[in-house]
Image 1 (cartoon, one colour):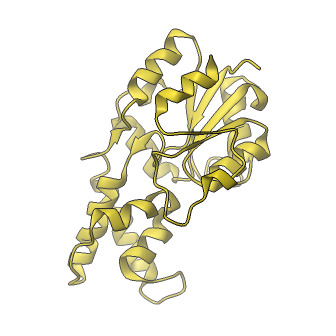
Image 2 (tube, helix red, strand yellow):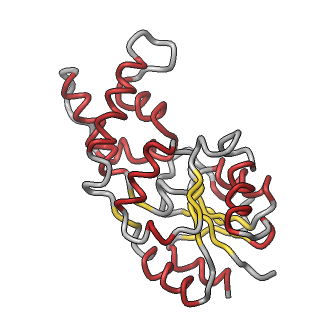
Length: 217
């Protein structure tokens, strides 16, 4: 099989967004008179969106009277400081160079909403080179539904079976498998203690982005 396109999840796979999300959460906690939470406690929740962040930061679930106000305060603060400390993961830059040399396009498929994804990608180095940027509200359904990956492949002009999808959450691997891509689980991402990536049925497990080249070659 020839891989003609590489697609990445955003948070925890392509970009290390946890530092800015961690600080946004702690600023909202401070406004509520709560002490800061350690980074190690917050990092594993990042790939699972604002609901997981509010659960970790405040112990609240949707339906609680205070939940939506805290979630909105958190997201507003994050948007205002979206790329202060966020960087591409170590190894992504040279990987993108290698893909460019091989004339292999790459793109982003994330469940992050477009109103957060687009400003973040504008500020990240190399973001303007993406062949597609598919957010959680771009397609009719978010991951693990295959629709976002189908949409990405259509934009790039490749078939799913010619594509490789890399992510750090089980829903990423499920979405790729549902769409018919090859899948790699990024062990360097935001995995929790309860995650068992070896049981996700990914085609491979990688500890560094450069290992993606081994699958291409």
